[in-house]
Each structure stands twice: as structure tokens, then as C-alpha cells.
Length: 252
Image 1 (cartoon, rainbow, N blue to C red):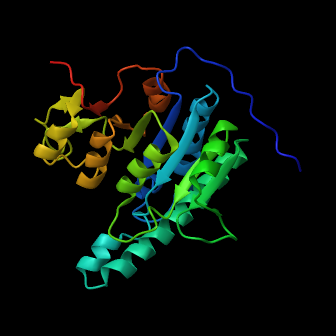
Image 2: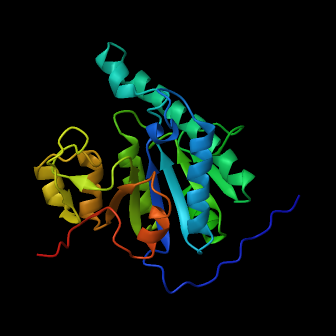
Image 3: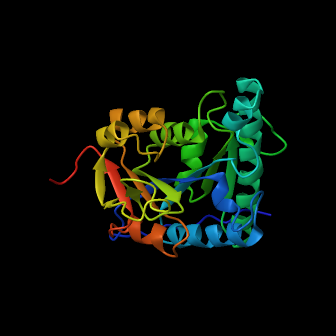
């Protein structure tokens, strides 16, 4: 069956035209302690559809922590490289689950894997990924960078740079960056804006230090927001104040 092209309509309301959405594997668990919750994946897909329908080009990097965490396994004695490769395979499972949910609501998607597995996904090719985005397809990047010792946060920063994304949208379970964990410390204060340097200096666990440094060196903003709140992705792309913006330019 011939694939229909999605017709893009210019939208002057958009602050960002091409975005990379970073999702943790845990965000797909819902209230479960492990694995994938179908209702949660469907919710994620519906939120992403709102953005695509606005004419935004969307790429996604997804973690695998709901299935397997390489770092934790290596701490318990498993060889680190092998553990990380297992974590990469977990991200492919999540990518396929999200792809299925997106396509069930009429969106065109492509999964590109940093590790070749032709029966399941395209092999990552930068120019092909950009072409998919230009045609209105959602591209889901799986298997991290394809290298051990690098997190999916670093993969998100790298892929965002390679495809020329305007911003990284980091979906979390809290509504931004705080001075401390707001779940554990009720006195923690939220930042509306914060610089890359301060994130590194105060060791705020937004993304790992490699990812933050890569974004800082290339002046790529990061918006940290609550993925569980409806319309948050849509509103931040319109330029509304949602979550915390990490950038080099912070208002005094």
C-alpha cells in the first residue's frame, strides 16, 4: 500500500520547528514496576500526535531502563560493555512499542537503530533520518549511540546535533529542574531557566555530564518538563513557559 505524505502547514506560532524528544524507559512503565504499560504508551503517542499535527518535525530517543539498565548490572558484577549492549537492545523493544502505538493513530514512523538489525529497524543513517523528518515522518532512534559507556542522554544530544534539531525536549516525571529532588525535599525550588554551567556545577541530574557538555559546546537548548501533564509538549513548542529551559543565555 502506498504511503500517504503528510502535508505540512506553516505555523507562525511555533518556537521550534524540529525537535528531539528524549524519553526515559521508565516513562513507559506507568504505575507498573517493570516493563511497558500499553495505556501509557498510547498516551505518549497521543501527545506526540498533537505536535506532529502542528507541522513540527519530531525525532525521539528512548531509554531502556524499564527493561534493563546496563550501569546497574555492571555494578552487580556484569562486564560493563556486555551490560550496555543489553541495555541498547532494551531501547529497541521500547522503540518498537512506541512505533506501534504511533502508527495505530495514523502517524508515519521509522525506527533507526545504531546497531544493525535489518528485520526490525533501519540502520541509522543521518541523511536518511533528515529526509524522513522532511517528509513528516517521526524518527525513533534506538540502541543509543551503538557504543558501550555512553548513555541514551548522550545519544539524544548527539542525534539532536546531527539532525539539526532546534531543542531537546526532555520528558520527566517532574515539572522542571529543582535545587533538590522535589519528591524527597519539599523545600526544593524550581528553576525557570538555568545555565549549562550551573547544571554541571551543582551536579543536577538532568542528563549526564557528557550530554550537557555536548549541548553547551553546540549551544543546543534543553527543556525539561513533565511528560505526564497533557499538552505540555505542545505548549513548550509554542514558546509558552513550561518546565525549565537549560541554555547558555539565562536572564539575570
